[in-house]
Structures are given as structure tokens and as C-alpha cells.
Image 1: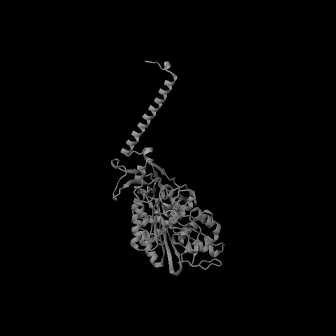
Image 2: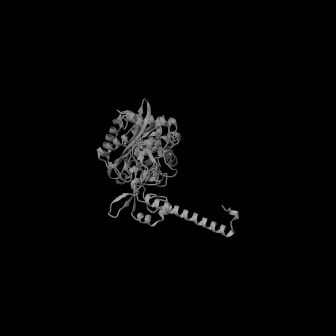
Image 3: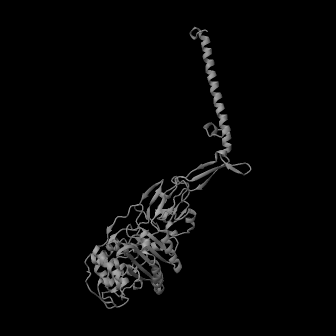
Length: 494
């Protein structure tokens, strides 16, 4: 055999060129075989996708979103508050005004949204960034010429894309207690009334029930509190030494202050500040309001959190329930005696929510330590649990002050002269309130806390809004008795 080095140069060049052609032909043949195999198997390699056949199939390819991937809002035991977003949109189920609803975004397409939906009101709106889906669940099908559909890849089972779900929010609401509270309100047939129950240990809102189920909750609507506000005045007066627990006041049924035309609802005679709380003496508190002055009243109300919604925020600077209203102490300027006297008995401009009233009772039951109510325990995402921190405690009033007021609230229920003696069969300490409105209508209140084994266990507020006076008080007592009949152990178990 002739060696390569012995061949003429011309022959070597020809053999080299023929070798290159042979390699190229083999490469092209292999690629052609691969392309034909991909077309036969329906594989998605790049050469097939760019081919004409795939473009024809793509015209008949249909995708359908089978789940939006949005997280759910749940009760404290983990059960869904609303089983699907459709239920939220229709406003059914327990407390739909707290859950809110899901609706279309104002702008679409939006690069921050993978699904054309956002929270509209309630927890759905406040926690939308957490609940929002990162990717919906999709399925794909081919629409055939005869109108039938089949999975996109035949025997391969079709095309499916799993969602990347938003987080599930776990709230503090107890579904069983919330159901019972709403049943009590519904059975009485009132337009506007509410029941709130708060756990003292973590300030968890166990129940936030409203008779009305519109956009706003009755429990989060600020209304005139009447004599419930006297608890704030008493705390301010004792803490600032404007009065002391042994001072005696005289009530002859008329307020004896310059430029003040006010009568007490009954003649109480001589009484202490504890007696004045238990018997709700307007004369005593009108005098204390004038002694305190505007600044001291405002500071005390702020320390008890009354000008707020009463709810702990989930995100800094953002309301947990966007529709929740803030309380008010003064709307107009001035510090004349008439303004201060009316404010001190919870009239004039004073407004607070029933939830804030329950927080007020919880603060006094806890020795004067204020913390807003918590509505969200945390959220679960990707198998991880992210808990919400317990709100930090702040001093609203001294322990001695809280003890004096707490004893007075006990006497309001268990002393025959107390305004809530009709509830003396229940182990509670409470304060009543009646705010006078136009046309002989009133807001009727009771705020307080349950006592188990000699210790406070949970705080509550019950309010009936804008009813004729007699009817309002009858409804209030009926609701209070039905609610307080729920065993305190049920609240502690929650």
C-alpha cells in the first residue's frame, strides 16, 4: 500500500476534499433522521417548534386557567373562612365585611399581577400582596377540526402547569364563637349591633360580629359611647391626682358648673368615684372633666387607643381592615366647661368603635397595660409558618387606678344600685353606656370582662346602635344575656 507521504501532492488534496464531503453528508443525514423522528414523536425540540407543522398545531392550542392560585383566609383552627373566592365575591358566609372580596384590578395588564384580580376591601385588600398568586394553574388542549378537544400531547396526558400559590392567612377568629354571636344578633333582628370578644393573654380578637353585613362592620364603626367613656375620665383623674379614691362627691341631680346646663339621670346623693362609676353619675364626671381639661382628656384617650381602630396593624402604617373607622375625642377647638362636661360623659364629639371598647375593658382587666387587638395570627407559605408578633404592651394607666376602676365595674354588676344589676348572675365586671342621639334614639353599650377563678379571662363589648331608647336597652340586655351564657371555658379554650 502506498504511504501518504509517498503520494503525489495532487492526489493527497483530492483525497482530503473527498473526506470533507463524506463527513458533511453523514452529518446532514444524521440531522435529517433526527428531525423526522421528532416530527413523528411530537417532541418539542427547537427544529420542530420552528417548523411549519408545529405552527399549524399552535393555532388550535387552547389553555385554560383552572385555579387562580390565590391564598385563602382561614379561621384560627385552620379551616377556610371562605371556601373559594367566588363565595367571597358574593358576600356570603361569616362576617363577609371582614374578609372583603376579590375583584378586577383598576389597570390590566399589570406586570405585578399574573392573574387579573386583586383584593377589594377587608383582609383580602389589606393582605393582597401576601395572598396574591405567583402563577395560576393551567391546562392545555388541542381543538380539532370537528370541534372536539383532546390533550395537547395525546398519550402523554396533556399539558398542565401547577400553580405557585399565595400564602394562606390564619386569623384569630374562632369560627364556632363567631357563628354563635352572629346567630344571636340575627335572631334579635336589629339593623346595627355588634358583639366583640378579646382574649386577654395575646389580645386575640376571637369574635368580631356585626348585625349588618355591608361594606363596613358595626363592630368597627365609630359611634358615640356614652358613659363607657367615663372609664377613661376616671383613669385620667386618678392617675393625675385630680381626685382620689376616697373623695366624696354630691349629686343632687343637677350639675353646678358655670355655663353648664346638665342634669343627671337620677339623684345619687353622696358618693365616691367608684360609686360614680358603678351608678354612672353624670354630675361627678362632668365635674371631673372640667377639672382635667382638654389636654389631659385627650392624652388619656390616646393611651387607651380610643382614637385608633383598635386593631394591631399587620404592616406598618397600613390598616388591617381598610374600612375600620378611627375614634374621635374632640372635633372642634375650645376648652369651655360645657364642652368638657359633655365630653366627660361620652357625648359631644366622642366616638369609638365597639372593638376599641373591648380593648378598653381588656386594658383595665390587665392592670392598665394597653395592647391593640390582633386579628391575624400569621400566614403559611411553602410549608413555612410565619407568625405575627404579639403587640407590645404600653402603660395606659397605673395598676392601682385599674384596680379601683375594676372594683367599681364589678359593683356596677353585683351591687343592687349598679346600672348592670340585671346581669348579676354572670361572673363579670362591666360598665354600661347610653349615648343620646336625635329624635329620642340612643346607642346602648356594655363593655367588661369575664372573671374565672378570681382572675379576668377575656374582655367583651356589646353595642346596639341608633334605636329608640327603650327598645335599645331591651335588645342590649337580651343580647348580653345570650352571649354571656356562653361558658368562659370556651373563650379560654380558643
